[in-house]
Length: 293
Ligand code: A3P
Image (cartoon, rainbow, N blue to C red; front, side, top):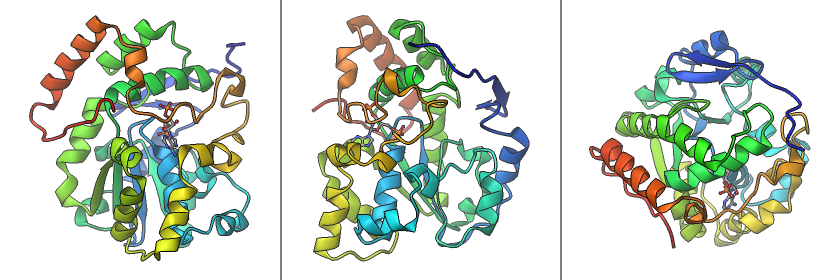
């Protein structure tokens, strides 16, 4: 019915907007000083770029493609097994967790552990073309009770253009992380590469993690991380997330999983403005995206 069950205050904090009740600014500040083990893996994403997908792939690669083994580990969701480091209580749990510690984060570079830049641990940065990120994020704002429901698409489009969202602007996130790519042990991969050739993506990911997979194991990882199969697994599609956080009647977390849905939403004028902003912001980077197929 679109009525939010819970509203949270947004807390601008050192260039990143946090959500009170979800994040604790003091806790977030201490992430910078965390000791990092070589076996730690951080999946870094701007929201709606394939975080849950990479959670699924990491778990499967670690379990050599054995989906049942992951579920035996415990019955928790992917988000429980590969948690966000910035959520309340998560940093404390990280300190004592057994290796390998697999984590995801939306944090910008400057708030993440300094040790990453000494090539301790590993980072997988998943980037997605920002037009599709915008559309996916628009729908996610309707679904997520901790985010303000957008008035309409046009209103949300303007907010995205201004970078006026929870977290930071898409451009800032990718540019800062990408500029530190060579300081750390980082695999930079795009959502579009994963869509176009999931098998090669999984091969790159497992090689980066130093996990050798047989052809059969590789095939199993791929099979259990396709959109249609993940949609059938409640732990992998956030169906288990409480109705207090996600209004499941508003839509599915696993929404479309395609490249180019922005074309069904952007007007010609919006697209021109977006292209202009993209070229201005990204001129100094070598990054190119696949916008449609
Ligand atoms: P759409 O809203 O465009 O469908 P995140 O996990 O970072 O929040 O990203 C969510 C987006 O990734 C959603 O995009 C979701 O459908 C998509 N996604 C999740 N798993 C996927 C998969 N296996 N294949 C393709 N897209 C996937």
